Amino acid sequence: MEHKFDISDVTNRRLSTLARHLEVSTMESSVNEGLYASITSGFDGNSNSVFAHVVKAPEDPILGVTVAYNNDPSPVKLNLGVGAYRTEEGKPLVLNVVRRAEQQLVNDRSRVKEYLPITGLAEFNKLSAKLMFGADSPAIKENRVTTVQCLSGTGSLRVGGEFLARHYHERTIYIPQPTWGNHPKIFSLAGLSVKTYRYYDPATRGLNFQGLLEDLGSAPSGAVVLLHACAHNPTGVDPTIQQWEKIRQLMRSKRLLPFFDSAYQGFASGNLDTDAKPVRMFVADGGECLLAQSYAKNMGLYGERVGALSIVCNTADVANRVESQLKLVTRPMFSNPPIHGASIVATILRDRNMYDEWTVELKAMAERIISMRQKLFDALQTRGTPGDWSHIIKQIGMFTFTGLNKEQVAFMTKEYHIYMTSDGRISMAGLSSKTIPHLADAMHAAVTRTL
Ligand code: PGU
Image 1: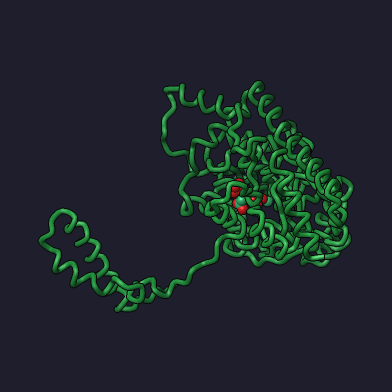
Image 2: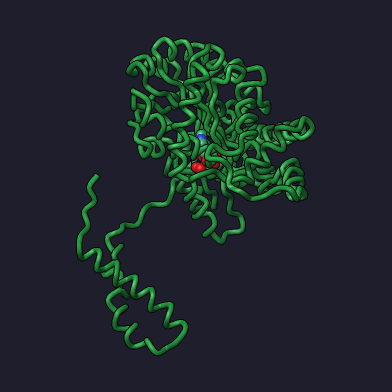
């Protein structure tokens, strides 16, 4: 690719470097003040900035909700935007088992902070694959799985997308409609062309299974299909096991390539193995697939950015070559992944006792969310809020896709200081018994005022 430089750009850049240089010197002495003022005067106003043409980007549709929430001084404000678990007291939770693992790591004086290999912490990769595919997975035993540690779920999806754009013959990925808002951006920036398949039926607030089968049925042979492994975001609607089986048969018969996004293993049913079932069905048939795993939610390691990309291949030899190419994707992207989060996960997954403790804590999180569903449903019933709200109980995972529209959401934010994404998704994990009446009041008012 040819790079063209405009000479005035270069001059501007040099001048700004000089100005920055002088800024440092003026801190040390005031001798240069006059000269500094005359050189920098051209840079003072917005209009002369080399970035003057940069337009203000809108806030992120999900993380921007937290920004707006943080700026609200109201004491009754409630953030149900981001999918982040809160305790009954409304506080973020660090799992006990995570604290234990971290303590162990800190106490171990032999640990160092050297770079990890490009593919990350080998033990973490192995254990992550085992967690999803199962301890007795033939694909693992036959060394047909390659796993690379990436920056949480997002990074794993991006690396998988870039690998496919470079090495896979069909560059179209089908994502569910609707899906997590970052999916289309991740995959198009990775170099794939993004199309959607029908998933959610607003009329039934359930799965549009017929539409899904039709859309995948008419996708070009070989196309990549993004599937939420469990606890679909934002709808909280998953296919049943029988429906998964039909999806699998259709996809395999059409040679569609499954790319699973697993951000909520354990959060749907409260059980890690149950939630892994759909993925295991696809691996059991001997076919190939990709998997992006995140430990943000199920271990509460949000900010540690710990996750993995696995690619299940036909043979060990292919897997080996695929891994060598994955290294060429990640090396110029982030060189090698961070050590701390992966070490916490490996410490927990390798130790039977800690693993069990984790499953108990995970189940408690999932159960608290389920109890919030019932409480919110009951609160709306008590208020006689018009409409059928049974989907609040039926949907699973972290979110309820309420069916509230943009205007109703805006009303709830303005009048009740309740923050949520404009598509009407609420994070059930952000609720507590104390805040449910406030939310139910807001929902009741939003629904009845626009009747
Ligand atoms: N995939 C899905 C389906 C997700 O919902 C999320 C996070 C991710 C991947 C990425 O998670 P990592 O943190 O990169 O592991 N979705 C949350 C978190 C906020 C956000 O948008 O990143 C959400 O509230 O939708």
